[in-house]
Image 1 (cartoon, rainbow, N blue to C red):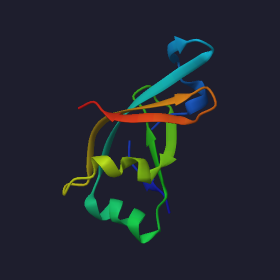
Image 2 (image 1 turned 120 degrees about the vertical axis):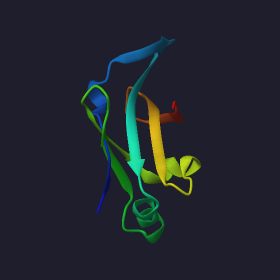
Image 3 (image 1 turned 135 degrees about the vertical axis):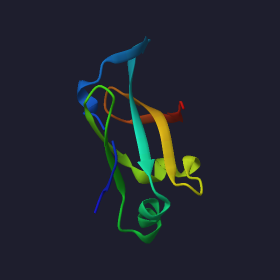
Image 4 (image 1 turned 90 degrees about the horizontal axis):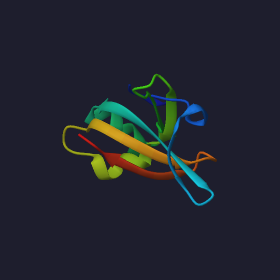
Length: 96
């Protein structure tokens, strides 16, 4: 089973920042994952989060990257995920 919330297709994202020979891309999305839903990660029944970014693209990423943002209310807020041109994760930041 996959955890689902609001997501984006990474390969079609617009470049955000160009430095040297590396292009960094990012997507913004909103999550509202309940504590019970996130518990599935720890039980091993969920490994990925699939959501829709604000630009309509679908994004899938490992649920464990959200651990720093887990509260007693689950994972809630607006986030930015950044990645390189090969789709390798660079960072995830809570922006509101």
